[in-house]
Amino acid sequence: MYRYELKLDFDFKPRSARKFGKEIADKLKFLTSFFGIRVIDVKVYETSKGLHLYVSIYSSVELDDRDIVVLQLALGSDYKRELFNWLRVRSRDKFKHWNVLFKVKYKNGKIISKEEKTELAKEIEYYVRKYLQLYNHVIVQYG
Image (cartoon, rainbow, N blue to C red):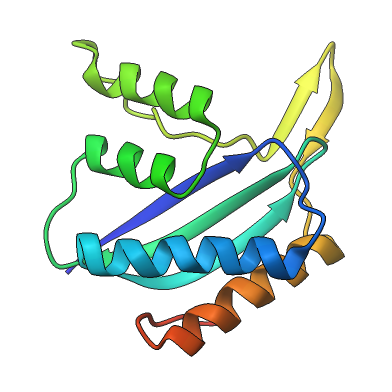
């Protein structure tokens, strides 16, 4: 088994944590059958502009960086970010750290955004995990 982390960036805040959580779980459910992956854990953080999701997965086959970009794009991660990731992955200059989400962003020495475990983030995390467990297609660990 191979372990990977998908990093998803959403530049909006959903009106309904339940609906958004279900949409993410539905997409993950589809990808588990299509790609043969297993979800281990999901962590959600709110930023000033939106959300960061970290999805830990197992795969029975080795995934390359291109596969990771496709999975992140299929899950709805910001398309501009994923297109830049695709260009980095395709580049002849191999980027060691091509798949990055910034936990803190600075501008002129001041923090302009940071990941936070807010009530919205906790609620979305709860619903993603709940629906994944209901689908019985994935393993989700709490931690």
